[in-house]
Image (tube, rainbow, N blue to C red):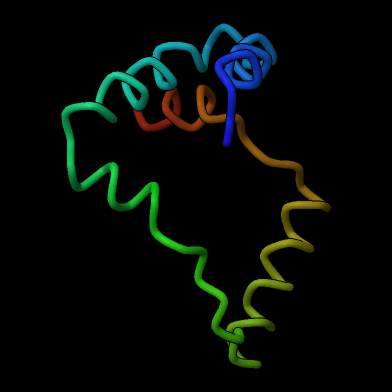
Length: 80
């Protein structure tokens, strides 16, 4: 079971630009049964089909070659 200290450590590692997002998620947990169910759902452990694996490999190569965007950069580009 996760302790409050472990969560505090994770929060302390977040960049300032992600704190509002983390607050929205954590604030919704006690109130939103759907969000709680999604967060508690088991990880999908079904095998990835070969055609999807090829698509994922191509995306990872592109990300490695071109870099990526932070959440804040993506939201800025989308005007959000």
